[in-house]
Image 1 (cartoon, rainbow, N blue to C red):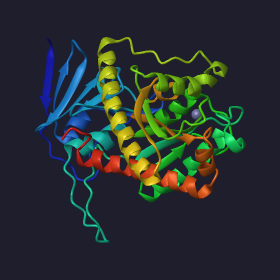
Image 2 (image 1 turned 135 degrees about the horizontal axis):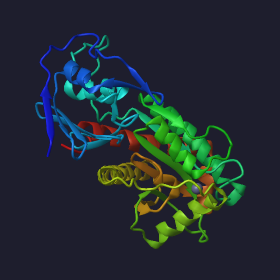
Image 3 (image 1 turned 45 degrees about the horizontal axis):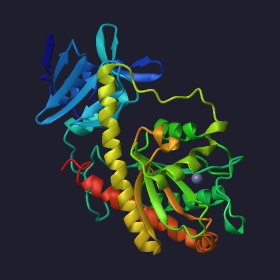
Length: 359
Ligand SMILES: [Zn+2]
């Protein structure tokens, strides 16, 4: 194995840490590896066989792979805005990754005393800052039609907007995949979350069943292992797929290293998705006093393209008279939004204090 290793010795400069020309490559700003190593006083190892770069300092380490835009930060997969590249015979790293992630991992922050007396929250790579909420259906796709002529697309949009307000009040940046009655394809919804680089993706839906007795609240995550009920719900939610552009595919990366990183990221996301589903189900069912149908795995197309932990929430059955009557009422929809927000905040607190469940 051919290994190149190094260690920068120059001191950390206080203000402009990176002293490097900025390279604009395909619209992404890059800085040189040597300037990053120099600025944060890192050690590094470049394995020219596997094309893997390991940056380390103390017990912290970041692994990046050439041409891949997935890095492992202390074992946790994170997405870069662009891949690690070889440019003019030196390794270059996306500037924003260097500034947001590497700086956070490797440079100790000065403690700033807040003006108001509030607890100092550690700036962590595990902080949840950005969520994309996806109001299911819209435009030519009404979703399920329920009792009292309720349309799923209207319920989901209304609850999503209310949920956005609750989460924003907790300091989270929230984006909606749609904020009015318009059609958006399923793959585009996940794509919006990916482009926003969201910490997680939440798709909001309302259920309908042939049995008018069916009722309750349930949260799904993407899984290959499914039961019959989950299969039926997924089939209904995926139904509009036949109207969509089928040229879009989610191919697994072919490069073996990248494929391995993809697998790690996928299983990490699934673990987080299950945990998120549990938090939302538990809190929401208690607050709303509705039947807890639990958290389940299902093959939802809309979740498949999301590159972050993601769940699909069925807020109730609009085919059930009692639940449709409740969902028709804006006060109840407000309660639903509040309950989902509480579940998300619970998850956020747990995730952040346990540093992404690594503690
Ligand atoms: Zn739906």
